[in-house]
Image (cartoon, rainbow, N blue to C red; front, side):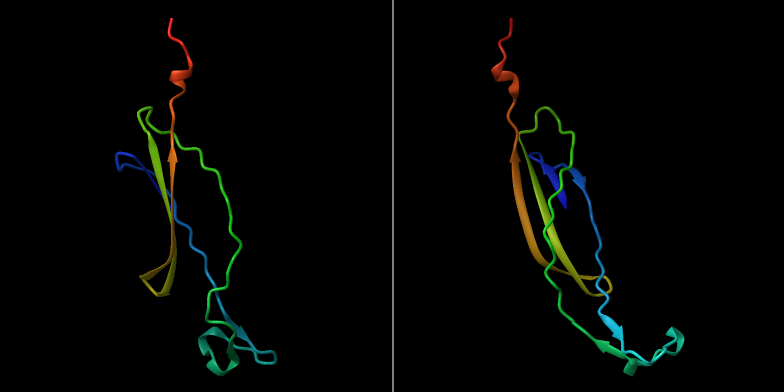
Length: 106
């Protein structure tokens, strides 16, 4: 997730890694990792299961002259080490309005 202000400055970034281990051992075989017998493993699912969507609130300080912040969230898949593929990208823009216009200056 990356948040940028209207000047292109990155004001917040966050990355999370989720892992999906989908090899399961069939019952009755004890397998030491150093002597791993591939026939003792059953591939359950090579696909990505849909997860529950989540919603979070992040409080980020922005410059008082900021009019908009664009938030881009990417769901990436790593099919092999250091090779990332984008599965989905969602972009939202948040507009800021100054409250100064509602107050009279005396």
